[in-house]
Image 1 (tube, helix red, strand yellow):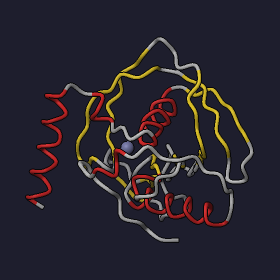
Image 2 (cartoon, helix red, strand yellow):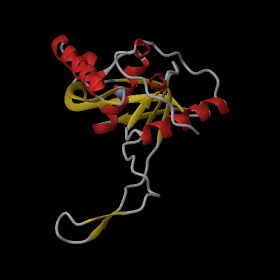
Image 3 (cartoon, helix red, strand yellow):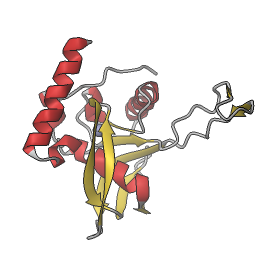
Image 4 (cartoon, helix red, strand yellow):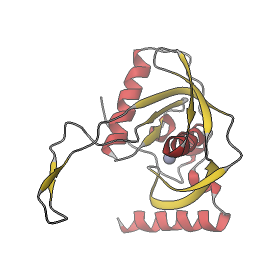
Amino acid sequence: MAIREIIEAPDPRLKTVSVPVETFDAELKALVDDMFETMYAANGIGLAAIQIGIPQRVLVIDLQPDDPDAEPEPCDHDGHHHTHQPTKREPRVFINPEILDPSVETKAYQEGCLSVPDIYADVDRPSTCRVRWQDLEGNAHEEAMDDMMAVCIQHEMDHLNGILFIDHLSRLKRNMALKKLDKMRKAA
Ligand code: ZN
C-alpha cells in the first residue's frame, strides 16, 4: 500500500473521462488499497481514481473515516474529562458505477474536494438516487442512496466524467474559487 499524490485543479487530467474497468484482478485491488490509504491520509470521505491520475471508473467512499485503531482522544471541552471514541470505518468500493433514477427533488449541500483544497461551496443535486456498480470481484450490486451518501456518490461520479464540483457553480464563483486556490498555493 502507498499514499499517492492527489492531483489538484486546474490540472487538465481532472477533465479526463475515465474508462470502464474490464479486468477484476490483483492490480485493481492494489489500486483500491492505495486509494483508501491516500483518502484516509488526506482526511477525505471520497476519492476517484482519476484524482491520483488513474483514468479508470473506480471510486472509494467512507463517510466514517475515523481510524478505529487510533488512541481514544481525551477531551474536556465541557469541563468533564472523558474520552472521545472514534467511530468505526465503513469503506465502500464502487467499480463502474452508474446513477439511476435521480430524484426530481434537489438539495443543496456544502461540498469540498481533495482536488480543490480549502474551497467549499453549496451545490444543488438530486436528493436521492439509485446506484448500480460492480465490486472487486466483478459482481453487480444496486442500492438506493440518500443523504450524505447520495451527495458523495454523485460528486465522485462527476470525477469519472471529468467534472469538478466547482463546475456546478456560476462562472463568476468558479473563477473566484480558482483564484483563491492559486493565491493559497502561492502563499504556501
Ligand atoms: Zn472531489
